[in-house]
Length: 431
Image (cartoon, rainbow, N blue to C red; front, side, top):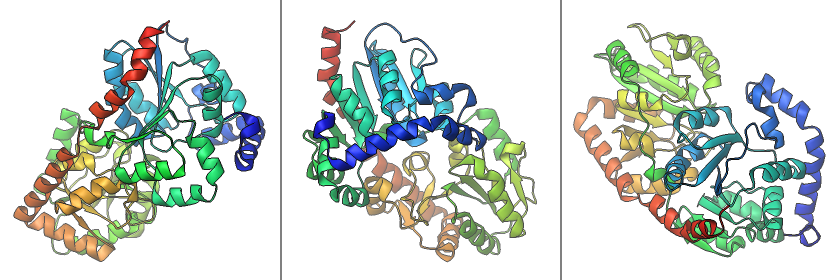
């Protein structure tokens, strides 16, 4: 992928990215003001490492945000256990906090550099990775070009390419082929994803399944769980998890309808982005529903109708607490959020029609009748009430979802087997 052979669109991208690099300090400062960057680690976004590179073979693993990082942690643990140094990068504050809590002791987290040539080169000069594993759909032209120039093997793991994204790339076929041809091995998370990658120009493609099916369910602090369980004892509880703007209003409307038939109903809303907690609470106040914020240290008292779970890393607690969970990002055209964790923890699942981000999971769970699709607040209220009221219906649904998810496991072992030749080469030529 040498500069002179690049299609025009990628030439334009690389030029624009270089120009944008000059504006990076101002842009990063703006993001700090918005609470989206760590001011103490801004240099990492410009490719400046905050710690030395450890000696020995180093595998760089990259995931964009929380979901990707969570799916990569078991892979990082397995590589660390085999003696490889692991560098994990991500691009969000929340994912960095999860990495700090859950990475193996010897692994390193850094924020990924912006995709400007100078930043990427500075990053690679310092870390000098022996193998790069990029998750899902993180296709960065400058990074890929620089890795090619240095002959660093690049593997796309848990590769995902939605039909919508594939259609957009198909309008730039030469650019898509130039970019995807730089990937040594593409490990797709489904047969459909594999087909789309092949069509657009990826040379070596395998369907390894979705790493997210192999992620252990999130834990819950026993003391925090005990306090919450005591606070809601005897009340019906509905969880709306990972919600997006435009969904909370429908959840509040559904709550009002269900509460007419189930007095004492508590609805917990966990926004996908916890910093939206205050905005979600304001919607509840406007709807004249008593609300409490977890970030303020409050527990739901008997009068609380809406509890906003605007903290990080506690979804495992709420999945265990609520017998019925609506998965957000699905009533709006976002593509849905991950249903695997609540399915593993025995929550009965509801979701909207827009779930293309997790097609394989939702298809398998749906075929097993392990989830209910809803289209609006009325649907959400009707099926929430049915699942909360009918224990047999709820238990049949949760059992079916758990069985469907369990059957989809094995991606971690297949991914490790696929990258084994690269790991052997690293050992043979290790520093």
